Amino acid sequence: MQILHDVFPAYVAVAQEGTLILGDLHSSPRTEGTYGLDKARVVITPERIIIANDSNEGPVIVFSEEYSEFNKSGEKNQDSHVITKTGKMLAYRKNSACGCGSRLRAWNPYRHVYSSKDPSE
Image 1 (cartoon, rainbow, N blue to C red):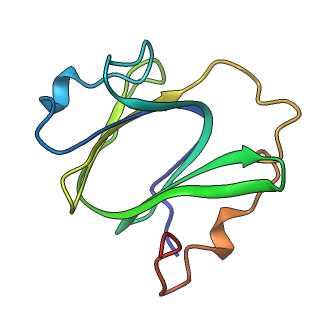
Image 2 (cartoon, rainbow, N blue to C red; image 1 turned 60 degrees about the vertical axis):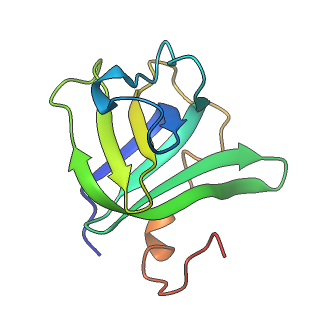
């Protein structure tokens, strides 16, 4: 499976369809009224965005959807943007923290992207 982008740790902001213009969505500082994470792992495949977060039980996929648009930023300090097929808008960028102590650093997301079943179901 081809991986287009794999960012850890990452700031993430998620907005519902129709609530913002994509250019107004920022992950850090996070746009007011959006849901966000500060130390997530973001994996982009040719069809899907997968976001994982640390939990007491280890890494867990908290978001996984097919997308219709992916705009990768050329700069680490600027947001990349994704629009899912259901209209959700996401912004993410590299967090300057090291992610030390997180199990997401060693987590292998690549074995999960082969599944044909949506892990959010």
